[in-house]
Image (tube, rainbow, N blue to C red; front, side, top):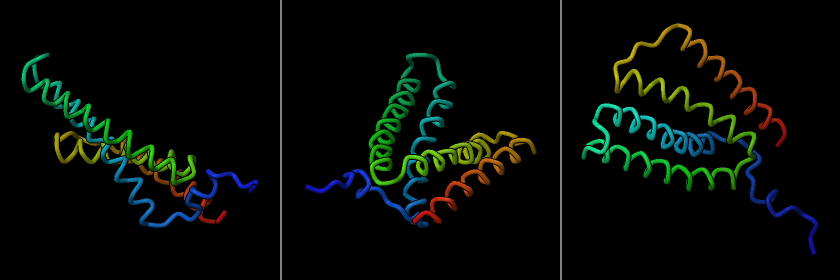
Length: 129
């Protein structure tokens, strides 16, 4: 009988561009629910279009839940959660591209601070492996 923790053998130790891309794909799916939510606000409650966007939002969250379970199964939780903070970047990008919202210098500065934190966590994880 082995004393090895079964969860440890499944976790990915080295952070690669591919692993970051996988995590970001999950985060992008998550931010899609926010897009659906914003679209929902354009329609009267319980109208066809409102129900459509609510349904799409629930579907996006369902896909994300499955995706996220697979991510946390394969990556250290600290890495997964740190990279989930990229959602603020994707949300800001969608705000600019899809909704033509104005982004302030403070918004940009906040995202840069978040990026710095994510890079710090990822670089620490890279050194541990």
